[in-house]
Image (cartoon, rainbow, N blue to C red; front, top):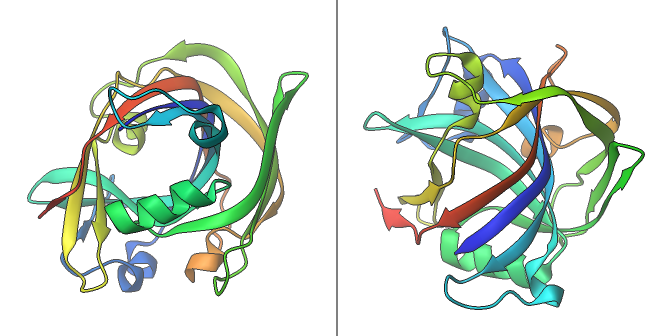
Length: 226
């Protein structure tokens, strides 16, 4: 698949790996930086979502998405583990659940740029799911930069596969390709944020590490069994 991500916020909180361990399959090792694990809330909006070599459909291919994630490694291959992904498009939610075995949920969502701030609102509406709400606004500060290998920013953002588990607990990996992130330092205000609690993880008390990316063009391959 091909897709573009816009106005993305990386909001990362440090967290004790022991608090994440019960929520991640045993086959996956929690990836840490200086013995510290991280959990992230990542709001953005998508466009051009389509199978490669097919046209994008305006009513199907553009919608907000919001994920809660941490970082794992399998056989020395670092990747992303999603606790949840909320999207406004019910077709995309159903397809991602079936194809990628990812924990997608339907949500009522809205995002817009107002005087340089991205105003983002999401409320999960998926039947039978735990409530999850995000009301926030955020904006970039400063010049864009590429993270350097060995830095915390590189560890948190430059990851090129996602791991998922099917209903039988079997792990698969979906490869992702994109250019290096063009990051900017960000500021954000969170009016409501229950996204980690919906995954059974207490919201971290520390201040988040914030980065913004204006756009990222992405190619995603079909998942393969690990």
